[in-house]
Amino acid sequence: MSPLLEVSDLVKTYPVKRNLLGRVRERTTVTDHVSFTVERGETVGIVGESGAGKSTVGRLALRLIEPDSGSIVFDGRDVRGLSRAELREFRQRAQMIFQDPFSSLDPHMTIREAVGEPLTIHRGLKGIERDAAVTALLARVGLRADQLDKYPREFSGGQLQRIAIARALTTEPDFIVCDEPVAALDVSIQAQVLNLLIDLQRERGLAYVFVSHDLSLVRFLAHRVAVMRKGVIVEMGPTEQVFTDPQHAYTKTLLEAIPDPRAHFLGRRAEADAGRAASAMVGTGKES
Ligand SMILES: Nc1ncnc2c1ncn2[C@@H]1O[C@H](COP(=O)(O)OP(=O)(O)OP(=O)(O)O)[C@@H](O)[C@H]1O
Ligand SMILES: [Mg+2]
Image (cartoon, rainbow, N blue to C red; front, side):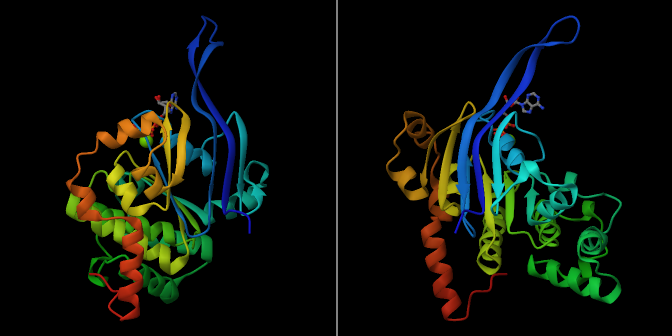
């Protein structure tokens, strides 16, 4: 089977200098022939220093911004050639979660409305049916029914990120770009949200691109990891291989810079999978 997502040779440049008439004199290259695949149900981590082009890659993959050149193939179809209707369907199947969930929620909408709205728009759900779907989705991400008529400002950062995840799930996506989704949260809350992402992945066969400057989080979550530097993927491979046997000098530098304790606290993706499989077998797989 072909990969769920295959991006090839993505180039994105931005104008940096213009002449007096506003004509572009010089451009800066933000992604330079970036290529990678994402399999169904897989998490691909993207790490690298600030300004490396990680978020740009995520946005390009979802066609939220246009590349100068290169191709993006999702489930066998070139995303750049989609009609409006097809693009709409693509937007449902491929979602994004941001670092700041508050900014992606309308402050004047209750959580019930915020999660209900896309259920009406994309799935035509109304009334009791819609309400049941809202309650079920919010329960799944860990919110109680008596919290549904509150506004975003009444929730903590972790709860808001759970709400943003529920909102992303309304369209039943098979792919989500998570751009630093826990960077703004307390460490203890980070692990809960990451575990939720892993559980949802197992339940729904979701694929993630997980963008983070935090290598221990990526080690915990990603099956494969791409290391970016100045718009280029300098190294990509299975997470444990890249972490234990880095090939590129830049990867080695990044790894040496990890302040470690959290790596132990979170563990590794392989352990997370093994642990969850075991607890599912004895029927205690539920988390709070
Ligand atoms: N709209 C834009 N116009 C001009 N330059 C841009 C634009 N968007 C991004 N850039 C530049 O592209 C480069 C890559 O940005 P990007 O946000 O992808 O980096 P990043 O790896 O996500 O960084 P961070 O870890 O800080 O989030 C940066 O140098 C940034 O200044
Ligand atoms: Mg970024």
